[in-house]
Image (cartoon, rainbow, N blue to C red; front, side, top):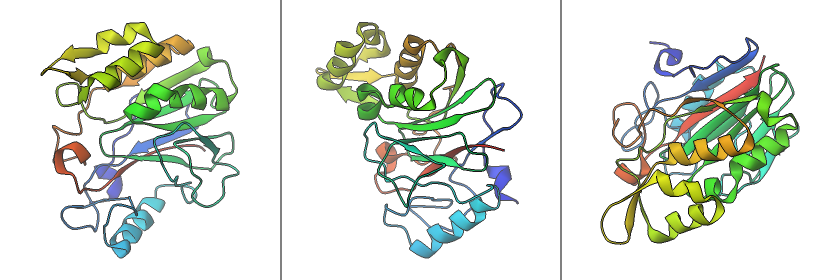
Length: 244
């Protein structure tokens, strides 16, 4: 079976020249606990297995993806001019063939493109980056009116499994009071957070109304997705976008 058969294709009305894909954990060379299509070189997996997985992935991409050194921040790299492993949690591109990618295993991957097919972006939105403004930074770096953009929300930990403390809720609410609606009280001092809803609120505030995806849970779907919260030591999936 070809690796493309194990990948997800974003279901959104992007222009025809926008290409995007989402890997799963299936179809690769890694063994447990990274089985099997781990793309992360920083998680303790056999480097040869990661290399084989990335080489297989490269058959689907027009060029080597611009891998990022993700640090749960808000820095944005230009995939068309990036050096080796830039420290950033998002990338954008106006250059055909330059591949933006973020890696996740519970954090939210966000893909963005404009309706003219002139610019793309990918953001790694863990709760820290999302709270601090990684989506806003990515949209700003795309340099087009936010109203012309659409977004796709990839697989992330769902609201029934994402327990956080008071400090996380307080941080979001301090920046956006309506974020309170994305938290449901759990045990004392704990909340169940809806990272998809938190992202939608940020996107709406920017003027982005066309938002797709946001209906998968990495924690609950162990067959298809890696989950750091569920497994601890585990692999990473990739979310890719480029202009053809």
